[in-house]
Length: 401
Image (cartoon, rainbow, N blue to C red; front, side, top):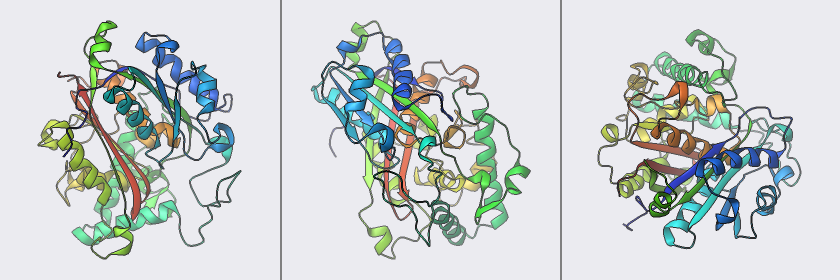
């Protein structure tokens, strides 16, 4: 395996916009909101940035196809700027570009920014007619909830889980995220919900009810990265560094071969294994302190706990109901509220997750701050469907160089 990038790159500063229905702002405004916070946090000037990456996925009505909108919005000094898109892994892909640029020595300081303003597009996450240059998203026999509901059915069949046990564990996932999101001023949804509310909500695709699904939102998040040496020369202490960045992309096997039983995400298992090797993590259940995963649906979060090798196969239901992933549990998952409460502005989500890790490790997460100051955190994005997707995983932590 390649040596990887462990502790070669430090996060110099980060910013995140308020997520929600931002009717009063366009995509460029959201970029500036996230960037202004990140720049102030980094303590540098724009002219010191050597290269930048823009992550945005389907919101081309406002952002366009090139990287020009980022350079214009931030008045970047004619530096290389690259636009990336990789389904729901887009934000982390932007981060990966900036981190790799610094790790390679091609840039001293690099920027990653993810943005999506979905509310104006009318995109609601369900099949619909396309807008602008987007292809039509009217699949007569499929929907995102429908595909992920099949994941739940396959999981139940494989482990013989009682439907009511799985449903209650899924409900706990949603209630937990709303409890956490209520303590986050940047979350889209800050209302608490109850188990009964989730269990009795309208069915979308059995067993996924309304409160098992995340929503659509507007938002942006930004990271500025550099080497640990430069960060220290700029007066930074208690550095948060990148331990691993891994991406795994389906090659068609899940959809075309019966070796995949539909109950798990093959890409997540592969990317997680690589990420742990790169970060030097041997026992993730004992060593990882904090997780942000791609909870597009509550069952996705449940299954991902096993694919990340945190819960044993078939045991995630029990860990969830035992509070293992609660904010005061052993390994909090979605301590910021997750996609469930932030919604999913696609290009921004991955960087929003890393932003939470960064704050938590510096003890700056406010009311939701984990008291034991996490040392190692993992973020996970999943773009596509259970049978064909892109998975990205990042591990960040206290610098140990």
